[in-house]
Length: 262
Image (cartoon, rainbow, N blue to C red; front, side):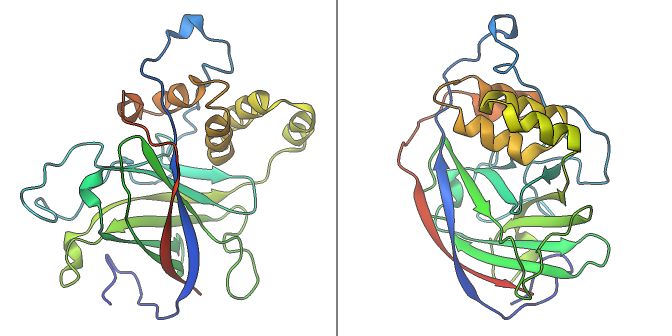
């Protein structure tokens, strides 16, 4: 297998499960003046970290996949902050993506590299099935490597890529999105505040601390009780395009995948 853009070939395969979440987005966004602070949660701009400047999908040249496909800015999007660094405080990182159903039945690959050494530390392959408007793909990365050590070390930067394979014979045609991952340690003050906070307060605390994954996960979990929380969070990081009216399916689908770790 030829991997895209200078990634080393890996031959180990294990199995995992990747969940596609059905997230109901409201038909309209309320004006910010009518929202409580938690409902109007915004994620701050924490500065340039050298990540790719856009969370939207792209490729090495125009005309990816079949020429008859009509591409749009929302064909493939990573749910990530404007600086495109996914920070997380827990033991496990997750990638959240918005994909058009034009990629139905295609194979996608995920790679994670050490940003400094360029070593590939994780590789997974999955079949895209059941893609429908209004759904997000959530890919949970393993918390540990094959050695038993944490897959992502605290304080280190890792690059990730989600590539949809258009031609197995020419991987330069991949349609992909990429960014950075960083495992962070909450400050003692934040840990103390989180201990007694409600879920909505926790989302706001994580956002103020610049910790993206926990902010996003809590906003999604609260989407039924606080339906404006998630779309307003996405709007704050420039992803308002996917908060527009969409057809919603309420039952999550499950992908079968093949993956390998080093």
